[in-house]
Length: 132
Image (cartoon, rainbow, N blue to C red):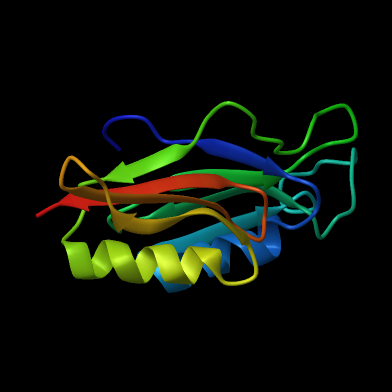
C-alpha cells in the first residue's frame, strides 16, 4: 500500500459495502468475520476486518464494535480528483450515487475543471472530478 488508505467503520453493513465498492472500482474484496478473528464483542458474522485491494482505489473497512462510532462524515470528502480518466471518473460518480444522494452534480466549473460531490448509500462522502 502507498499513500493514505481510509479505514471505514460501518454500522453492520461492511459485508455489503465492500462488494459495492469492488463492483465500482475493481480490485479484490477480502473480508474476515468477528468469529474468524475470535472476537466476542459483536455478532460472529460481522466483519472484523476487510479490505479492497489491488485496484485503483484501496480502502479498509469493518463493522463498528459496540464501543466504536460508525461512519458519519462531516466536513470532509474522499477525493478522487484526477485519479483516472474522465470517462472512468464519470462512471464512478454515477455508480457511487446509485442509492445515495448527489450533493452537487458532476459538471464543468467556470475555471474549466469538472467536479461533483455525493454521499453514497453507505454514508461515505465523495468528491470526484477531472480537468480536460
